[in-house]
Image 1 (cartoon, rainbow, N blue to C red):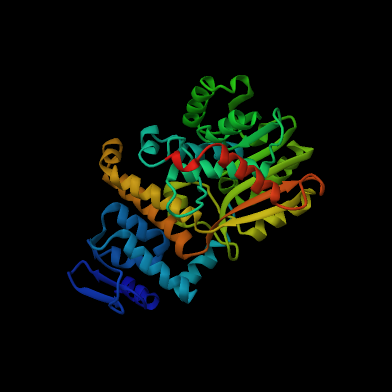
Image 2 (cartoon, rainbow, N blue to C red):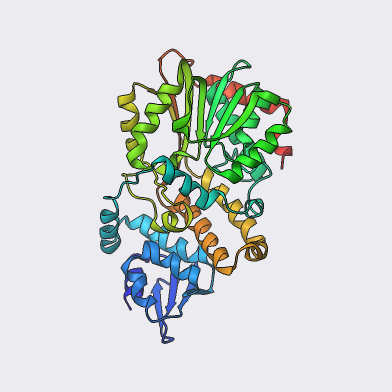
Length: 408
């Protein structure tokens, strides 16, 4: 069987068993844990899974044509990723990836709105099943792996605020891709910033507006249903968390050019995005097709090469490695604990699709080359202090004022 042959060419450590549609078992690996057994329910899947496994494995699991009968979906994908990560290559998968690298996603305004609606305008009840109370749908910041999700998300917001150097009230902040409003409200309420958030999601915008109406920050925080390319004016600070993934590789130069146009001469911008720690590559095709339409992930070289012609200066880059793996673990465990509720909202196929998405992404950060970049940008060399001490001082002073560990 072709699919079993591909797995056998990858897996050396760990154990898989593939039961084909005729009931024949194909043993793969060295017999050591972790162990997972898969059953294929259709003859056609034995071939389609081999033709483009990066897409078809997820589709087969989602549609019930690939069933886990022993172990878990996590065990199966973890065995494959650990081995593929160690070997670094597989001739057939490498060929598919080379073909995929030719694709560069464009993202005009009209398509951007459609792409956002595909994911972010899903039921609010869905996101309540696995996100923290503030609905932070991006990488949290774990001081240690035992932190609660709520505490780690609170630390993420503080870490970003410190890098923005919000050292006086009244600074004008633009939040590009403001989500459900949590970061913008935090910056306005905690640091006295004057915040404008922009999103293309109608669901997120409505939720943000409701939160803003009840916020003690009052008129200092507002949210617009608008593309970042339609924003006018100048800002002291610009922040974008989890939005750059949706810009599209063809639009990187446009994005950073717009950042430069909107940023004051003594301003600071911070871009927080998922990316690859190795060479440029396309996003996983299952994620693009079923989860984040139009999304793409940058390598650091792609980001820097897009920044350089604009005249912006890269003031600092921090790479968060396992933080998102831990974030996704929390999301996956919460989601699966309430899978029956999600099935009632949608159906079992939707549950399997999202389980596959959450598992695949967690393993990408734990075993493969996915990381998070926090890139700090300025227009002048002298805008920020010469050392990073100011970041630590702000975080320590804020933590001493209120114990983050009590949040969760």
